[in-house]
Amino acid sequence: MNRRKKINQLLKAHAKKANAKLAPRSTKPKYISKADRLKMAEQAALEADPVVES
View 1 (cartoon, one colour):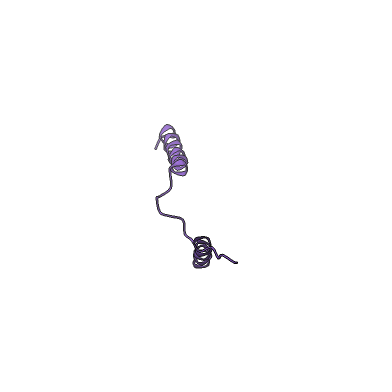
View 2: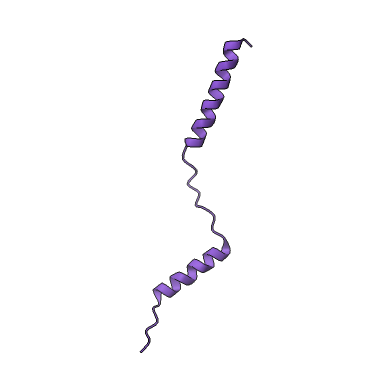
């Protein structure tokens, strides 16, 4: 491999990695732990059923 081809190959590889970093991530939702899901469910239940004290 000649010098010019090696340099071009390296530059292309670096550009490819940089583009991969900038590319949007997958549409997969972010992981939420079981404990956090329970906390969110409790908060939603409290907001949905306001207790009226007389």
